[in-house]
Image (cartoon, rainbow, N blue to C red; front, side, top):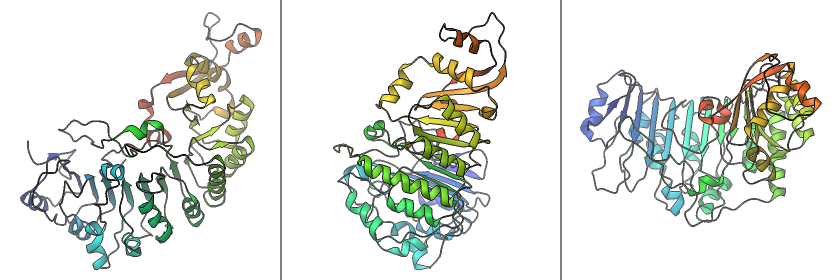
Length: 434
């Protein structure tokens, strides 16, 4: 197997075996190389430490499955010396959080930048599975606050697992959380008081995704993602400890946090175009109305509420004239979830087809119910009298079947992976920047 693969063109290379110093030295000669992805080995095989040299035109760096006990190579010089670096994705093996193992030291990645007092002009940064002690606020100066436009933090803080809560709380209590004046996108699987405060200090977010932690996340243990020549198992971004029991916050705490977040969103981020809220936050009708009124630019919106009436949906859509995708979130196992998931999708198709022809829904292209039900909307038509739509037999149903009717098709969730309120609603790791 060769030590690297060409991906797309000569400007983008992906390493799929542990490279030696000679490989990195060869990459220096590739002056057009702008994107580098390194998949770290996962076996504890002794090998010499390699200092990865700078790449002068590198703009994107992805390093994943990082485990200091398996892969000792030093990327600190690469991070310091690649002055055009704009996109950085670091994914640590989830094994360390699952086992409560303190083997990560961020100084091995950013120590040279701190010593040189160099702030990286990163635009997009993504952090997965970080578990390490708090070493001081010097790390907050590593990234230029003014340059940061997109931030993704998954399974890296705010854990209620007893195995990790001590270190996570050190970051929360002692860390100096900088304001990011030009931040446009935030994706995280955690909500807490510090997160709400961060939103009040930030202005002008355009996309915000709070990923819901689902029961299936707690049983994943592998984070291996595929390279072009290497198959993979499921790519897990956020498994829980194998021996831990998920700890849920009280409904009152959850309600208070939801109120703080929604207040911050309404006050500071009327510019939002995408908003995905957790399925734990069941919004009241009034809260939902007020939130929609304050976000007239929303194009994609995912939220949880009681089973909505048709009148409620019309009101919501009247406040969101630009909306093209709506998700009604349901916490798995909740009573409403059973109503959504047990019913035949044909019933949902009937309701959507006979309701969503109205002018309020004209720009809507996708509707989601729960995790798996997704419907794609087409044009409005009057069916021939010989056509029927599955539904009841009473007069009102017959009137609805007569039209007008919106064309509706049940589609897979995979088919909407490019629609962010579905595609980014996951803790799985993918070794690419979208």
